[in-house]
Image (tube, rainbow, N blue to C red; front, side, top):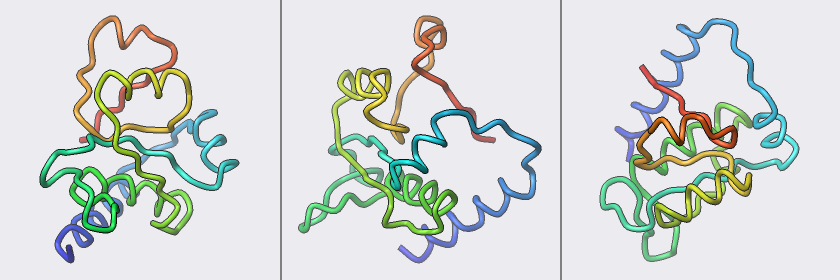
Length: 123
């Protein structure tokens, strides 16, 4: 867990140092207004997103959600992480019932043309 936290912090610092002017848009405004970031993950992907015995999701993808929460609010507990299947995650994002998905979703021409979706490439 400590390695994931250190990696997340290093990634956040790197992104901050390399970032240029960015337009956050309406999604960030919605996240701030909601007071939390709703993040979708695969409900059963060992190492990436699985619930522990208390129902709290753990893994790399869930830490990415918490990192986004820390970057926006300075508080990892403001990440509302929800396990949801692939087809439902796409519907949920398009319906604007979640802010982001930290899971495998392939960019296609059709999905990229959908105004309800925005794919982000992390370098």
